[in-house]
Length: 353
Ligand code: NAD
Image 1 (cartoon, rainbow, N blue to C red):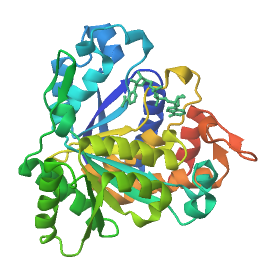
Image 2 (cartoon, helix red, strand yellow):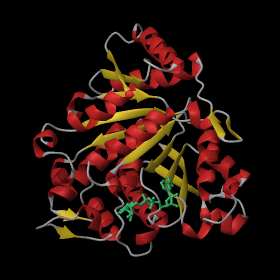
Image 3 (tube, rainbow, N blue to C red):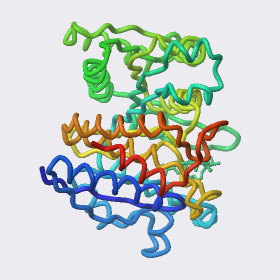
């Protein structure tokens, strides 16, 4: 298969981690007879420096025209003083909105080799943590009206049935590809938008009889994620709840350097990125963990290109790397061998079959 991938290296550790992910993609192309072409897209602080804009229109157009987008990370102190509409992160918000990617998908998985890194008690970790949070990404309170009049501030939370239905379907479809359990998270004891959310989810459930739907209030879900994470397979929720719960979920797995994400809309062109930021404190030192980005590339192969075997090959190569006792600095523990970013990429490449 021929695929055109828009590559956004971004700022801080972005270029280092993307370089390793591209080496892995090149190896996959060689092993499986594909051709991946990369289109460079400037976004974030580097685009401000070069073009005076965190995401110039022609860059957004290039991303939209691609088969999928692979992103490192953007941002850094250097651009803290630019006007808020021009900040590096604005480029990312514009990219998500421009691509129409409304479903953010973040796995919370604990690698058995890294179970010591979790802040949870061993007996909870040993039960296994492996679930996905599907978060609505371009609606809700973050996109409602924001205003401050005198000493009163207002933020508006709105969801239409259509917006809930399209993210709900992604939740059900994701559960279908996994263990057929979907937990819909809302605050229907207080919010009208959550009562509508719940109603739509239950209407959709009739179309997915093979998926078991349960409901949970968001405050309870926040507790259950640390108390009994094994109960979850797929969680589907609205934008702000998903933002908070997915950060909580990433923490119980140990290192944010390991976690990939995907954002999808109504086409197969998705946005794939690690969940961490540009880590300016370690940029340029060749010590960043590239695994979150490498696993994001694997998600791209699975969800946008339908290349399941290729995605699995990458995940197995990462698992083998960990089995062999190699660790980057962020996941280092006693008795393991510490490696840098480039060496981590090389060792994963060697494990690719
Ligand atoms: P961060 O995720 O960049 O870093 C938090 C901590 O985790 C740091 O100590 C960092 O060294 C470490 N870390 C992060 N990724 C790592 C990796 N792959 N390997 C090893 N260690 C890693 O968060 P921050 O410091 O709050 O933000 C830094 C910049 O990134 C800010 O400008 C922020 O706005 C931006 N940011 C961008 C994105 C994005 O591009 N999607 C997301 C979050 C933050």
